[in-house]
Image (cartoon, rainbow, N blue to C red; front, side, top):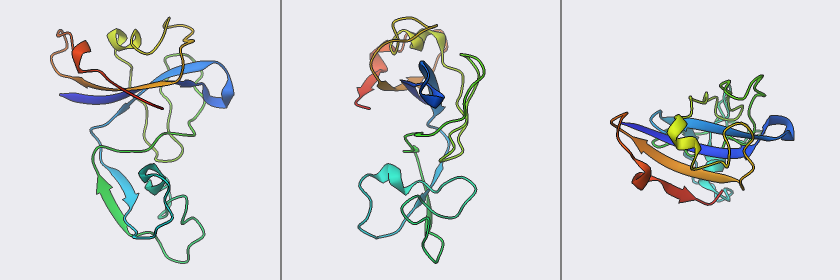
Length: 142
C-alpha cells in the first residue's frame, strides 16, 4: 500500500499553481524537545542538512532528534520545477515529491494543466493500482 499527501498549492516562486504529491511512507526527523515554543508540530521538522528545527536554528546545542511516521512537514518552501510534472524537493525537510497518480488529480484541481481550485490537501491511501480508492480520500484544511 502507498500513503500519499496530494496538494494543490501556489507554485514555487508564487507563479501559478502546482499539484504535488509527497510520500507519507518515509520517516521524518523531528525535534523531540519539551520546549513550549512550537505553535504546531510541523515546526518540529529538522531542517534538511542541519541538526536543528526552525525555532531552534540559533540554539547552542543540536535538537534532540526523533523519527515520526507519518511525516508532518507542510513543505512550505520547495524548489522550482521546470515543467508541470517535474518532481520538486522540499527545502525544509529534504523530501522529494513523487508522481501524482493521474486519477487523484481530479480531486485537487479543476484541470490538470492549470489548476485553479483553492488550496487543498488530501491524504490518499493507494493499494491495488486498478481499484477505485476515491472513498478513502480524506480532505484536510490547508
